[in-house]
Image (tube, rainbow, N blue to C red; front, side, top):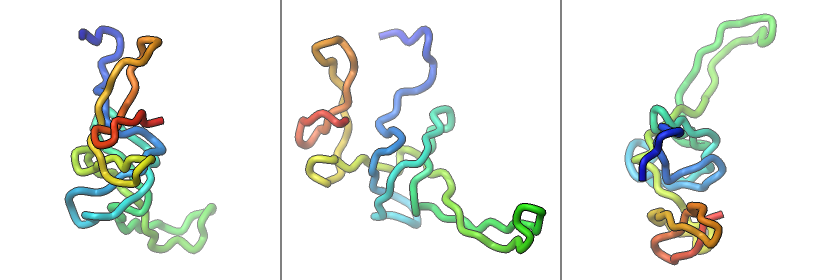
Length: 113
């Protein structure tokens, strides 16, 4: 199937999904996807891949200081948690009755969202 209009890659993870980290310092942690960058194939996951950020004092934040913020993690290091069973699963796509692609769990076969 040719993708003429939309050249952005199709990903198995979307904003709002719950995912498990497969590799890296945070291996085994779970979190909710806050944002997905399709061009760079990276996702921002709540409470995962935390980094320290130093902020200078400014008019908005007169105290400045050090804060912990999430940074992006590569999509290949994440696996979707099946909402029905609560276990990590691979994701497949199939057409529904109306001809739209839907994601489904490869373990249980149930539609995701």
